[in-house]
Amino acid sequence: DGGITQSPKYLFRKEGQNVTLSCEQNLNHDAMYWYRQDPGQGLRLIYYSQIVNDFQKGDIAEGYSVSREKKESFPLTVTSAQKNPTAFYLCASRHMNTEAFFGQGTRLTVV
Amino acid sequence: KQEVTQIPAALSVPEGENLVLNCSFTDSAIYNLQWFRQDPGKGLTSLLLIQSSQREQTSGRLNASLDKSSGRSTLYIAASQPGDSATYLCAVRPRENYGQNFVFGPGTRLSVLP
Image (cartoon, rainbow over all chains, first blue to last red):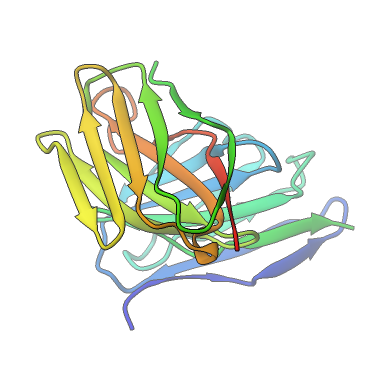
């Protein structure tokens, strides 16, 4: 089946630890995105990438890093510099001017 | 800067009613507008995409309209069912600044009561 897959579904991070969230798509989409969703708030853009080996900061990039070495993959690392990482993280992809598709999300909790 | 609002924030209706969700955006310079559905703890499911040159799109019991000049879109749900209960989000893709990015509204939380 074609789609966009995020893993893991749940992730727990200790203080001072870096963690990486996976996002993979087999839709042959050029653009990929990472959003953060907090309770009662809308989606906020962290990073996006329009092509391989290129990515741009969104509204809340501080404390996060990404890579885009392959078209299919856009992993997000939540670094220790992100002081309030507990949130629901959503990955999306799109080809040119068509529909955007989202993954099922990763819920990250600091323990 | 593009801003998107949605009214109402929450809506509770009995099963079978027809209902309208509203989305407003401040800048008419958009590529398209997309409606999504989000169930609790889940990702977003795409419902309808309207390109800037289109006036409406239909899928089953859903109909979305776009009035770009007035900065408005409506999502019409016919004969609502309890399974329609979810949060509905609209998002516009602005032509300027981020170019490829979406700007999301805060969502309307819909409850359809049996």
